[in-house]
Image (cartoon, rainbow over all chains, first blue to last red):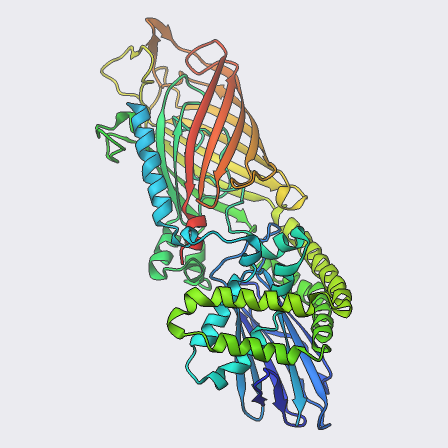
Length: 119
Length: 502
């Protein structure tokens, strides 16, 4: 997996991309919407702070896939959040390369769509 | 003289609140600018990370595509912005920084279920069941959490210390309280804690409390939320992102904005980055915000945000409705009322101390952040040594209190109205021995009823609250006649300040 200047990613055919999200606080309220992949595993929770999902790129050169990750800092219905809270996102390719991102509140809900192109 | 104590204490508290909250003294910002704060932090971290500008460019370009921030800033709907901005932690109704209801000077007829997570203190003036003028300063806190705070100076970090250790978790269910009587202080200003001014202590143990959304019991609910409503939110975000990316100008716009941010001098990022990012958001508004396709996608996206928040609030309501059960023990050193001609009939014998055990049950209602809360107390008090007629059990009490959050007052915060009633049955002379009041011997037992209306007014974002209470008693413990009185106080919850003072 290679990071491009635009922020998008170039991946090899059928490369496994693993998305790991860890929240400083708990629970880890993160959701994934991954589209255009050959396959994706269900979301797993290694612990109360983390969630992981792995997707496999297609074999078709030039195909594009996306994965949107939403994170939630709300601790009650008043929208209370801890300013020191943070979600850390790590995207790692099975054939090398990784990328790290962080989300800090506010806003109490945030998201990012990551775009992948098969080389 | 007592007024001077109060004013002195107020100044100390206000000084502390100012010095403990440096983050709150920053330049005032508009709610729209607040939408950018978290992302400015993330951008700052990306820009100051090691590496060349080319190495930082992908990360900066991605952060520039966080559309939640743009929607928060640019949305004409204030309610959506308020939902996305959230608030700092200080709205819980179930904390009691003040003295227990059996202490002289307490403004609380009912004990609440939770104590401050870290430390709180209160100055309260007045009495509830005796015609006394007590000024009580109470420090309440949690010993285990205080140690955790010393080990890790951040609020969140301190919560994580020992989070998987059952011993630490059990100890953090125990909290303590110490009260001092300001009237007995010899200090010319303020209060000097000493054995002379010590008026009581308390220990509280949470027997049942699952109000924290981090509690393991709720983890399946959060997983379910992420897999259903969260998934739908992520899908609506994907559609919105796709709509933005379909505009052929967007890549050039991202590149030009990344160029601006990457060119900012590192030594003045703190000053220049917030304005530069705000300019980027304004530039996006000028270029793209009114594009019809984007507006259509925005409409679906904001509906998805509202739907998610509504679903999540249902879980929060379920959490808030769970009961809290605590057991509280308090020790009170009795003293003669200071404003009346009360004298002991047996002058050589000191007044016995009091011990009270209170069972506190608290239950929330549905209705989100504005939902009321009901608290029930059942307590018994006994003397440390037999009363003059040989009995040790002083009284039994049952108290019911309803806390109703009121509409937020702009620039102040949401006040809370509390309505409470207490039935008290006195089995022995209230002070444990016969006394004379204005020369008449008092030996009064029997039942009495006390009703209270209390308004707790917060001082915005400071952790301070000012409780003002009016209490009607069918009689007092010493006097047969009915009594109406007012109580005022100041309570200070360090948790809300510590959460912000990073």
